[in-house]
Length: 398
Ligand code: 3PG
Ligand code: MG
Picture 1 (tube, protein in one colour):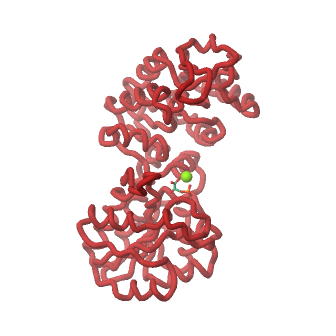
Picture 2: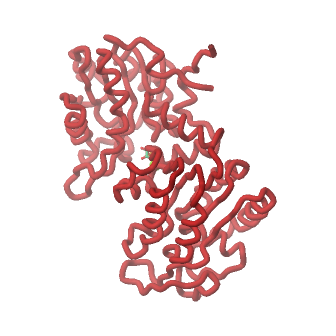
């Protein structure tokens, strides 16, 4: 069911509480924002509301302070950055509920924007506490959820609050649902999925859900080891999810039956230890010594995967091809990012680390869409309910 959006309600002069996902990466030493894409992504909704003279109250989490005030996770830097890119002063409240905050909200004029302090400083947020949700709701007339990245969490600011205010989707949330939903319901074919990352268990729901939609599936990253093992290759010290071996065998049989083209690495970069100082070499997957482990896909695999994506009309990518945090093991991931960027196709990048890589490489603008949700996009593509979306008002059928 399609959800009502901020366009479907009256917002002028209203106090509009917008849940955003400003959970941005911070530099550990300086505390500065290293990537502001998630802030940029909410600009359409904020500008829409400002133009219509709403009084805009933003609420977000940052990191995982676990119900306590953690000074390093204050949203002050976020308010500053948002002020800069919005070109208007964004105030920061002392907290997200309570008398002081109510006063700050009271003093907002039409078109003003106020950011409340990190909502996860209160344990009641993650508990989805009803009284806390009500206290939040008390600040506003209307609730807008634009936090796609947190839509898989059933928290007070994503779900509880919708019991007390008219609740609709923001423009980013709408765009995420349209784009990812389009991949599930109406992808242009051929449609390929490139999957990586550490574990099969993280991605299995999504893979199973798309088997009847994709024309090809390409698997790299740590999780390829479990597939290789299921094909009787020895993978040395690589992590194998023993309890997923049967499942991967079944999946591969299923793909064969359906005629889904399935590509696994044929060569890999292997290392004799995990750190940057390890010895490394390229080996055929048939030739991995017992004391070595897979850390990246090899050059022939890069070639095969890139070829496999040529001519595709839709490509979705989630998960690095190796341990990309270590520069020596990042070549496969970077090569695939460049390969996607060069395609004449709808290219959609899952959020989380895959989005970070693409943004880091300066390639985000060459992709059709980079999702702002990691866990949320995986869950959505598994056709599982996102509680934060479910809770919003349905669009009336016309
Ligand atoms: C994210 O970055 O994945 C979202 O902001 C959700 O954060 P969480 O995983 O801490 O709930
Ligand atoms: Mg997460």
